[in-house]
Length: 356
Image 1 (cartoon, one colour):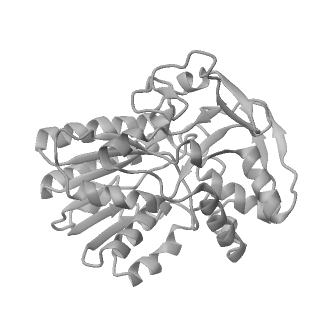
Image 2 (cartoon, helix red, strand yellow):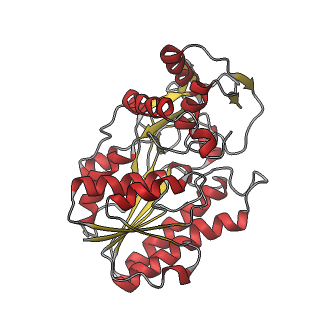
């Protein structure tokens, strides 16, 4: 089997490529990256040593992909993953749409040409920011959680946010570009009769991630905390009660293998994959974990709201369990310890990823 991975030198792409080779050494992986993410070049040699055929290309440029020969499957892992992209004054809104939406269209054209299957790595940020902010929350053990004494909107429960939760704007330009990509991918699959799967992922985290405050928050926070770099709780009560769940990319490998082998039209095409309630944590709790491991470090506070931030977003992955017999395999504390050990072994990681 020959698999094409876009954005292969990013955290998700490189993790999935390496993991797939660990599971099946007979597969052939071809990958490309435009190396726009600082630090992504560090993944070139490790991937090449595993036999990955790697080349430089920009998913936005159709001509960059014209030389790709027959492939069996495409994993679309190329994206600008920041919820602040296009609105932070440092990135272009047009380039965000070109990268996340038009890039997916170029890959779908490639899938059509080669009759290849297609897996889109999507995001929990396709869900409505307004609806998420309106969920009544309480503080428990230094973390926000839904107030179950009040009325929760459709798709929200103690298990998290399900696939039928509102995706009405605003969801951010990033979220909109991914949601549009989902719709277009499904249309291509139905129209041109090739299998398409939409995997909506929660926060991905693990060693080797190039974390930032607006993306890869678990990695960024641990690296910065261990370095005693400035950190700040932003928005809401300014106490770091915002809560997210996290998932290690390797936990997606079993479902990817099943998707490669399945084309059944009755199977749900859009499914959440997240760490869930058991793998969720607030920033305040993450700081406490860091302090217990490496000593105290002061975190500043700024209650000023930040665009598109939400108090609580945990993925409900019960449909994944029903459809694919899937559940996250890597415990939260295991992920955090993996990141911390990597941070200790790479004290200049934040500089390499252009954060400090």
